[in-house]
Every structure is written in C-alpha cells, then in structure tokens.
Length: 316
Image (cartoon, rainbow, N blue to C red; front, side, top):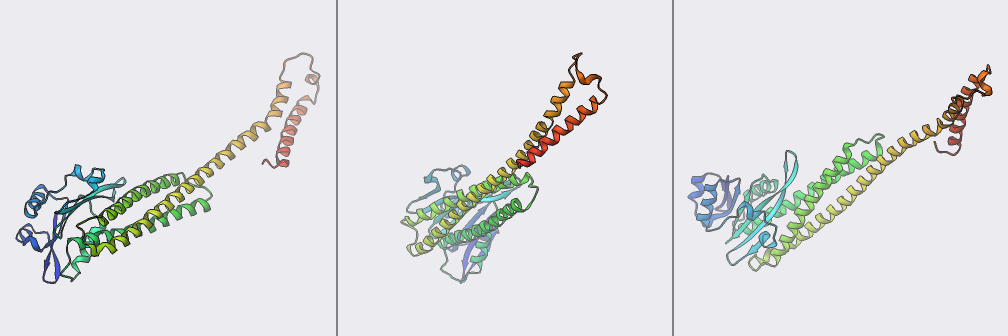
C-alpha cells in the first residue's frame, strides 16, 4: 500500500488512489509511506522521485553505514521497531529516505507512531511543513509512545513483585512472565539505543536543517531517559528473578527438611526393630510375656524423644 501526503493550499492531504497520486506534481508531495507495498508501487516511487529504495536485506544490515548515511542529495536511515506478533514481540526494520524536503518511508508492519503522526500532520495547517518536519514528528511520536509503553511495563512488573510478596503459593508461571519481561526490555533497550545513535548522527549531518537541532537535542535527552529507565527495569527484573528462585529454594529446603526429620525420627525405632529381629537363640526377651509390648513402647518412645529434641533445638 502506498500512502501519499501532499500540499493543498494551507493543509496537507492524503491519498491512496494510484491514479490520483500519479497525477500529482512531485513538488507538492511531502511524504510517501510505503506499507507492505507491491513491486509496482516501489517502481513507481523510484521512477517518479528519482530515488533508489532499500531492499529487505539492506534494511536489515547491522553496520553503522547501513543504519545512517548521507550525501549531497539525500539522507538515509534504517531503524528497528518493536512490534507484536502471535508468539510474542520482535524487531522489524523501517527505512527512511530524505530527499529535497521529501520523506519516503518503507515498512512491513503496522506502527502506532506512524498512525498518530499521520493524524497530526493532516490536522496541521502550516503550509511550510516538509519531509524534515514529518521526519521529526515521527520520532517525537515514537518517543512519546515508548515512554507510555515503559510506564505500562513498569506497572506489570510491579504487579509481579506484589504477587511474589503477597501470595502464599507462588505459581511457576511467574518465572516465565519475568523471562518474557526481560526479553521485552532487552529488545526495547536495543531499539531505543539505536534511535539515540540516529539522533546523534543527524546532529553531525551537513544537510539536515540547523534550525531543527534543538528538537533533536531534546529527543536525545528523552531517549537517554528511556534507556536509563530500561536499565532500572532490567535490574528490577533480575531482583524479582532472584527473589523467585530464592522462594523456590526455600520451598525445596522445607521439603528436604521434612524428609530429613522423618528419616532421623525413624532411625531409633529401626535400630530397636533390627536388634529384636536378630535370630539368636539366647535372647532374654524372646520368651518374656511383655517383650513385644516393650519393643513397641521403646520404638514409640525413641521417636517421641527425637521429635522433642528437634523441637527443643528449634529445628522444627
């Protein structure tokens, strides 16, 4: 799908109609958003706006030169965005091309930051809005969304911590929840750190408008605070994980302690039973009328004495 945003009088308009955006003057277009676009749509953009779009392989490259580059004609950037899928979350690359105040984006996933940015620019009545402004709006929106996401994640982690503190029986699923939160925090930290590096690279750019640098510095500070908060969340998750494992160890120790006590309690009766189980002919109690009750009494008494000793030592 191709979303085309163009100037019309004092406002920006959007069209997804191929015939309509094909008839537009390229000078009026400020943003082309390629979302799961076809080869025909990509070819149209390349021919009409004289650009070379990124391939999937180029967008996924991890070298710094692939993440950000510039020349006299355009600025290129590739960033990973977090998105939800059926079996959890993952990262997917999004490409940005800034060329003569025109922004071209390529993505394969739905993104809330793009949706909100589109609504914001369509309500904007400034006729001077161009691709550079939209570029910054996209990242301002992303930073705000990620801050809300971290707040929500903090509440979920707090709820897990309260569950460990209040519940008598801690379910094993909590460990899986902690692991999933750790994975999500790592992905979030990775993508936010990448975003911060992009802002720093743009500040060193020779072609990005200098009057927008103050916004970039503010966003760098915001990204810094997000990265710091992810570090705090990861430390908190490690603490919760250690707490959970400690509770499991305590539970296992109690079980082992019970088995140990039961073993020690039955040792004296076993010894007595073993003594009277020997088949020697000359054993005085064998022919005694009260020999059997005496053996049972000795076994019960030895068990009680052992239990009393454990209670006295406060081992039970």
